[in-house]
Amino acid sequence: MTRQEKVSEVERLAAAFRENRHAFLVGFQGMTVQSDTALRNELRRAGLRYHVVKNTLARRAATGTALEKLGDQFVGPTAVALAPEDPVTAAKLLLKLFKDHQQLAFKAGVVDGSLIGESDMEALANMPSREELLSRIMFLVNSGAQRIAAATSGVARNVAVVTAQVRDQKAE
Image (tube, rainbow, N blue to C red):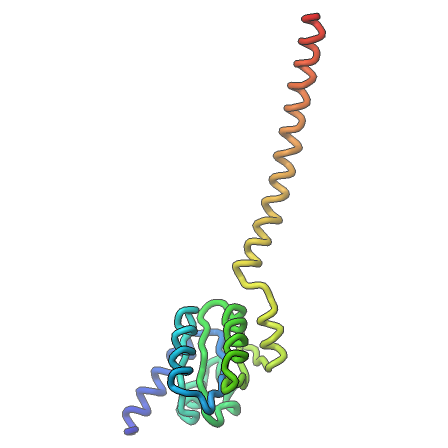
């Protein structure tokens, strides 16, 4: 790799690191090409970006970004899985892939600027996703409105029933 290629690679990685608030370092020693291709396709479908990196270039690119905290983790065969949106979905998918591919190993990660370890990764994967949390909040907000609507319509219904009973009594 020429010096110019290294400089452009560092710039490309630095831009990717700045754009993504969530990143997971993955060790992949011993993976076959077929397994790696399947892994990349699955990550791409989930909206994650996956880069196999040279450690020295990745350390340079991480300078000044949230991934700077991962500098000492860039050892051995390393790939970076970048999650632009939802770290919970990314953690769930990565844990599933770690179980499916024994060659994969979680090294460390950064979620919203905080360094996470393996136990944090599992806790993150067990959390409900952003969409699930939003649907729960909307259910709670909507349930209050439904109760108010049921209570106010109950008053009108009761008035109508009483009026109908009075009319029936007078008709007799």
